[in-house]
Amino acid sequence: AITDKQVAETGFKLLIRWPRGSRNEYMKTLANTPQNHFENIMNYFDDRLTNAILECLNNIIQSIKHAARGFKNCEYLKAISYLRCEAFEVTVT
Image 1 (cartoon, rainbow, N blue to C red):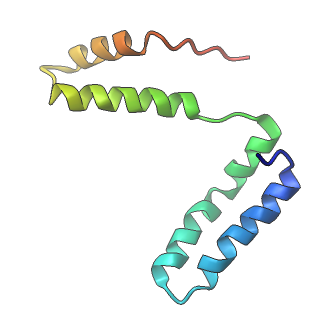
Image 2 (image 1 turned 60 degrees about the vertical axis):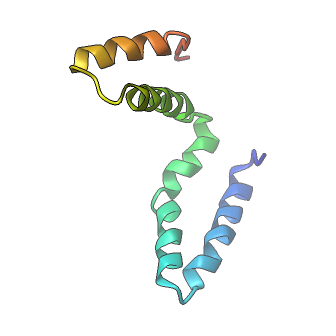
C-alpha cells in the first residue's frame, strides 16, 4: 500500500500517461475520469478518509431493492434498510 502522497502522485501520473497518449478515444476518455477526481484522490493522503462505509451501505440497500423486486411504498424500503443496516455503527472521530 502506498502511504506517501508524493509516491502516489507520481504513480497516478504514470498510470494515466499511457491511455492519454493512446490514439483510441475511449482510452483517452477513460484516463480523464480519474484525472477529474485527482484532488479528491490525493486528499486521502492528508485525511485518510474514504467513503467505503457509505458504499457498503448503498450496496446493501441495492441488494434489498433487488431481492424485493419493488416495495409498496418508500416507508417499507426505509424500514427494511434500517433493519438490514443496523449492524453498522458509524462513528466520526
